[in-house]
Every structure is written in structure tokens, then in C-alpha cells.
Image (cartoon, rainbow, N blue to C red; front, side, top):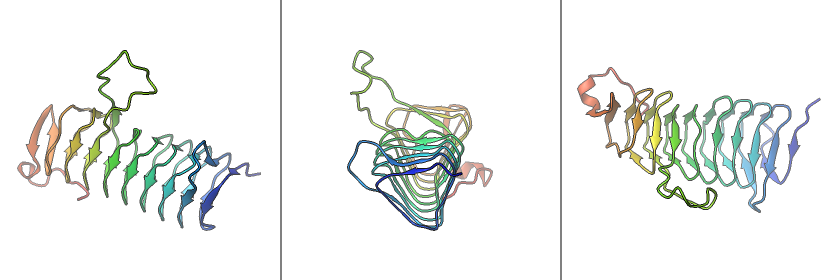
Length: 194
């Protein structure tokens, strides 16, 4: 028996939904819109005001928070979250948590994590809105890399697994062993999705 609760949602009938999901929950008055030809795993929560394009796959135990806007072709890996007001472009693969207001342009592979800078540690946790990162088209953020603060990662960039990035990264760059290199210097050893 499929125990899925659907509230105030515009969802195409071609979408396959797993068990024990909550779709359209939350406090905002915005309608949740979910496109065509997608799959939603079990134990998934999608809050109000979320927009998801067509041809997507959301794995089990994921959460997409209010007013996130997601393009076509999303792949959201097991147990990962896209937080409120995030913008995710077309054909993105997400295997890390996407923080509030973060922007991922088209064809980004994001397997890392994000942390705010916490410039004011004495302020109330829920009232501080610090800048969130922006990741350019086609870039790849490796597994367990950490993006700190509201930095901008350019188009066609590669951040190696396990790196800690605290500064902007220009287009066509590789960040490896705590240094920035032009991607051209690697002569095809790094492939992005640009």
C-alpha cells in the first residue's frame, strides 16, 4: 500500500512516486509544480513552492525545501537535500547538500558540501542570511570537497575531491592541492560537463 500524502501540488501523471512521501507540505502559499517523466523515491519530502522540470530522478530519503527552482534532467542522489530558494539548472547531478539560495547553473555535478562563513557567531542562527555560493555551467565539484562562503566558481571548472575552497575560481580552472591552475594545463586529464 502506497502511503503518499499529496497537498496543493501540480504534478504530471507520468511521474512515478515511491512510498511514504510528503509532496506539497510547508507554510508558503506558493504552489508546488512537478514536471513530466520523473521518478520520486520513497520517504521523499518536497515542500510548497518548489518547481521541478521534466525527466528527473529523485532518490530515496531526499528533501527539497520551499521555493527551490530546479530545471530539467535533475539527478538527486540518495538522502541529499536542496534547501530553500536554491536555483538548480538543467541536467545537474547532485550528490551533496545544496544550501539555501545556492545557484547551480546547467550541467553542474555537485558532490561536495557547503558551509557558511559565520562572520557573526553571536547572531541568532535562524536570522543570519549569509551569501551562498554560485557554481558555473558544466563545473564539477568533487566528493567531500568543501565550499566555504558566498564564493563564485566559474564555468567549466573542476574542484578536486577533498579540497577546501574559500575563494572565487575563474572560468576554465582546476582547484587541486590547494592551488588554482588553468584547465588547459592538464591537457584533457580533467573532463567537465561544459
